[in-house]
Image (cartoon, rainbow, N blue to C red; front, side, top):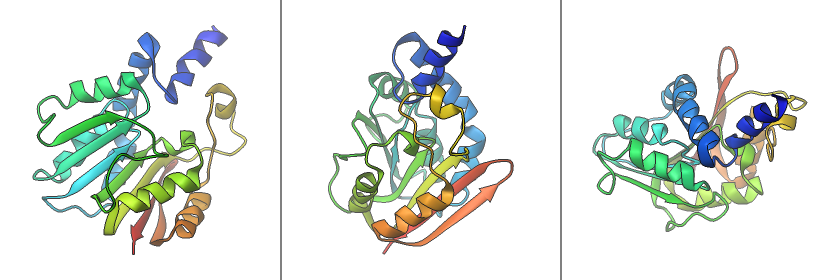
Length: 204
């Protein structure tokens, strides 16, 4: 039983196979309250170009497009299973307003100054070389663009790091400092009980 539990939650990093598909359904449902609240902290207009890194099952892409109905939203995820699920969830607008591909936050496949908004929901725990990834986000954001990291706050000594392979826990304050070091301005930590946090920065 313990092995099955660990196998299931290890799907958080890179969903694969049957357990991965189950995890993606759980993510789309379970992350909804955090994501909806986090998106309330972002300023939207009707025609934005948006990117969700670590798009998982694609629910955030759908929510982003709802916030900017005349815009376009792009998703990227390291997992084949996630990309396939995100495409299915967004099939109505796929290829016209929604675009999903496989890849990593470490090397984003878009030109400089492509996006008005970049989001990352419950995913920075798994990004390799976080300062490098933040430089990639900075590169693809337009001047004045917003970067919003949404997560549930976990203690650094949490047992989750032993259960979920490849997980590194960061406090909101650590992420704020890293965003400032990366060159983002007006970086703020917004919190909602019991444990939600959004760390938002603006590109100068």
